[in-house]
Length: 300
Image (cartoon, rainbow, N blue to C red; front, side):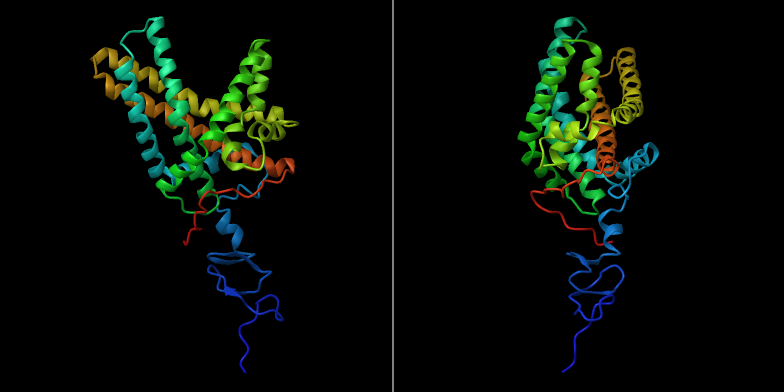
């Protein structure tokens, strides 16, 4: 009777599968992933293609990895940005009058806040899901990303409301305590989706505690990269709109796209990469991602 193939590393153990990447026979202890089958040597390069899960936090690698994630998911990200910017712009045109008086500005802010809390938050979580899947070597479709956003809306809305209320309470004391609390909670929006085993606010504070200066410096750098160009672009759009009397809806739409791309794409990608790397630095275990529908690993 002919014996079946044996494990390439453990000759006394039968092979359960052949590693899809290197072709090596793998026993149960060597087979890290089963769909597709990957050996323990090849699995990290497939399930952590950007090396952010195995690397301690550092500014430059974090920015580089975030840029690569955005570039890799750019078509899906742009689709989501447009999908959620169109209704936002339409609401502003339909419900907010023209002018820059206090009443008009206040109405615009209230409508924008209402839309972002009940609708835009879904898009923000969907974009984050795309980053998480890509960083884990998984293929997540646009529909699946939106499903993750919908499924996590309640948890995300609760965390955002609690974080805003907490920061406001500290702001009543002094400006510095408010900035301190904002830094402590800077990762709460990431923890909503990435760390289902913990309270989002507690997860953020646990990560920042003892590394406040590092996190504060990274936050300032991220704000400079994401928000300064956004303010410049929005100011330029406003000047062009007044100078050439451009139609309002296209201008509202372009402004919203710039805003959404800066916050939900740029800032979120940087915070996500930092969140993962800081777990390594802090020696805090990062539990596996809890997908509602586990996306498949990439075959390439």
